[in-house]
Length: 131
Image (cartoon, rainbow, N blue to C red; front, side, top):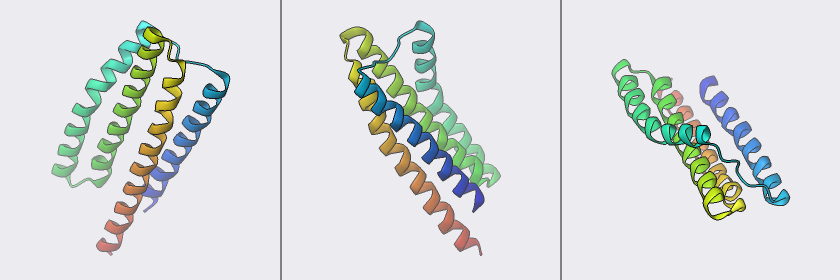
């Protein structure tokens, strides 16, 4: 149970940070900073993370490791975060839509919290079943 509670707290902390920074950026009219290194890293993560999800979940099932299976699901969140960064950065650079990055990050907060709640409920239900 500790793993799932810790995972949920980590997601809540990350979401609170992302939410706070997004609200600040919207009120201060600050857009994403673009760099070739950042864009390259985001593109790599968008394509690499789904591959890692598949591999970690397959290995987790083969090893009967719930922790590895759920860790694979963390990579989905990472892929969505990278896509959000990439879209925000590109649209800010191309169209000067400074608000898009922060707005997309707010939607990402909703997704992250839902993933965390789902993982917590599934983990707790599985532990009750195992008892």
